[in-house]
Amino acid sequence: MYSFRLVALACLSLVVGSDRAAAERPSPAAETLRRGDRSALVAIEVVAVQERAAGQFRATLEIKHVYCGPKYLKGLAIFTDTANQGNRVGGTAIPLLTAGEVGVWFLDLSDSQGVWKARYGTRKSLAADYDGVLKWAQTVEELAKRDGYKRLELARELCSHKQPSIAKLGIELLLQATPADAEKAGVPAFLDGLATNRNVSPSVLLRADGLLFAQNGKKWIESERRKAMAARFTEPMDVADAAEVIEHVRSGRNLGRDDHWFTPNEAAAILTKLATDPKQPKAVRELVVKDLSDRGTHRDFTYVVLAAVVRSDDNALRVAAAKGLARLASPGMPPDALPSYTAEQLNDLRALLKDEKDEKVAEALAKALRESFAPDKK
Image 1 (cartoon, rainbow, N blue to C red):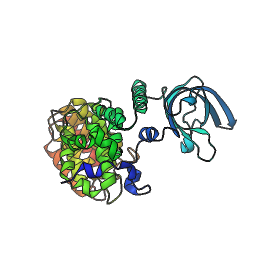
Image 2 (image 1 turned 120 degrees about the vertical axis):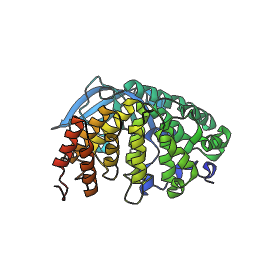
Image 3 (image 1 turned 90 degrees about the vertical axis):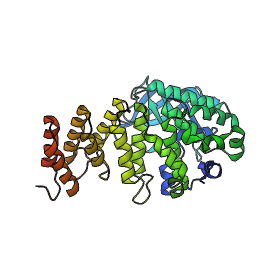
Image 4 (image 1 turned 30 degrees about the vertical axis):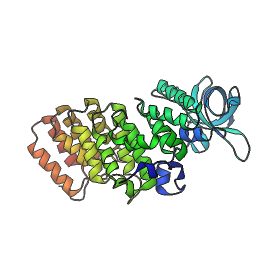
């Protein structure tokens, strides 16, 4: 039997440089908690922005509060590059920062210069849910006040939190605990019962799945515990958790040709269940259809899911899925869309159109056939 007691407590032993390790390294928050003297999470305010050269600016950030890290940082000024466009290599803040902006920032202490440098952060002006960001940062602060097994006891409680970013941090800390602290906090027993723990959110299971796969690969995927955990990825959930499931399925197909934590059939089955199960909130089913229609990647399961929705009973979703199929048949819509439908998919589209009674669905399916640029297009 696969045992968490043997393998789930060594997240930090991931081999840096391997594909799996690169895919699922500890989060910046978990690393900051571990390296509190050389990393920090702080609240900042932009107090000045100066142009250094044409299109190149440097912003001065005043540290207003320290959530995690040395307390002497409060009141200090640090600097970061900022610009209206470009890339974020080196921590450049894009778009251009403006005086008066506030945010939550990660800092690192430079090994070579002994200077604190801004890594990146979340700006209130750009955040969809800044209150949620502050709640997450305050949780990091509470964790930073505790050491050893006391921190792990709080992390266990966080695994039931309704905010995914907080719940995921909880499970990550449990999975990177030292054996001695883990035993004191009852972590092995908690992890052994993870898949059947109804107080744990889907986001926690997803994060655990990714980390355990990164650590153990095929051994984890083939375990009975993983199968029990994966079965919960399609249980009724809210939109926030559904978004986490969709992203997990996507990233599980992005790790490389032979290194996935979901096969195409498994990915299709999970997303089809989310999109067609009447027990799911309608907002969840709508999210799956919208995500696949807008982002359109993964030829190996996108078509399967949208076609399944067309065959379902919710007519509004059927129309949306059919329009998604039509959109993905058009070259370059979106930029990472499917290049074409396969011959098998085109035949299935023809069968769907032949039997379709709804005018809007039929119109969209006809467009999908018409605009597909597959080699065997009729």
